Structure formats: structure tokens, C-alpha cells
Length: 104
Image (tube, helix red, strand yellow):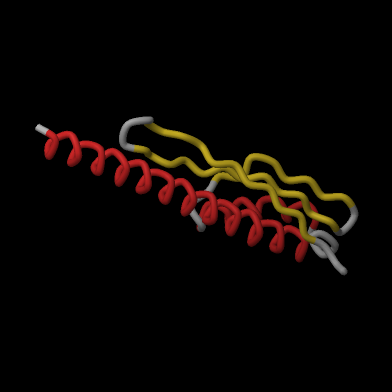
């Protein structure tokens, strides 16, 4: 009986570690997509500001994220992205990330 209880406890701990790891990976991917999208928008901010956010959306989509918001202030780009993650017992959750890029 104690063996079964110990196995169940170990399985619960392993599953929670796996979920935390999956969320951390999704968060890092979302921040990577936000960083790359902001760099792309900032790159085009002065040259082609009308298409800067469209290009940022394409970069976000290529990295598995959705562009939620893109703001250009002069040559500074502010980008918000979201990425969905499927967790075994909790269902679909959304990870949000924000990044800002511009000249130094």
C-alpha cells in the first residue's frame, strides 16, 4: 500500500515539474518572438513605417506567436505577442511577452 502511495506521489511531482518546464519553454519562446519582432519593426520604423508592424507580425508568426499589439514612436518599436500552450490537465493557456527595440 505504501509503495503505491509513494509511486503516485512521485508521478504527481514529476508531472508538475514537466508542466513548469513546458511553461518556462513557452515563455522563453514568446520572449524570443517578441524580441525578433521588435527588432524587425525598429529596423523598418524610419524606412517604411507603414509596413513595420506587418513585418513584425510575419516574424512573430514565423516564431509560433501572434502579434497582439505593435506601436511605433519615432524609431522605437513596442511589441506585444502571445503564444498558446497546451497543458495536460489545465487545458490551453496563453503566454504573453513584450519587447521594445530602437536605436541606441
